[in-house]
Image (cartoon, rainbow, N blue to C red; front, side, top):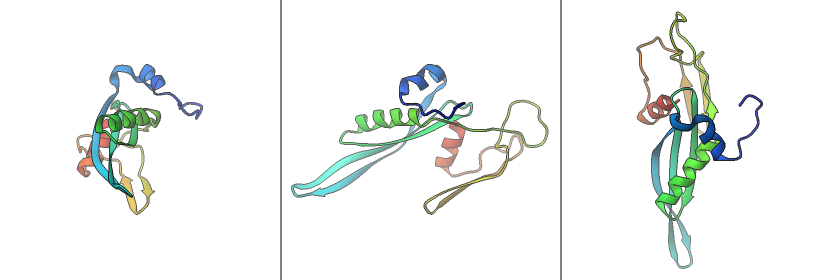
Length: 136
């Protein structure tokens, strides 16, 4: 991340983040394509990967088998790992526990807003957002 070079192999992430990295399957959903012979069903897997110390990645993969889709999504999530800046609210003692400032992200019609909070507040979010932020 230091020189903004893209990571091309998942094994590089395995080497640097080794034991700390854990993954979670967020959702597996069937998708269908209409062909001349009928419907072709494939499975789309959404996987989040993180080390709870400021690194998180998200991967999406579609395959005809669930296990293959999950494995591919884990590999893609490792290639998409990004650092998450963390900071303090109030005094600067202890470990960083929140985001450093208000931040807003937008993709399509969805807006996500992160607001710093004092220590002990916890994550106030939807269940999916809570899982993602806990992994970061």
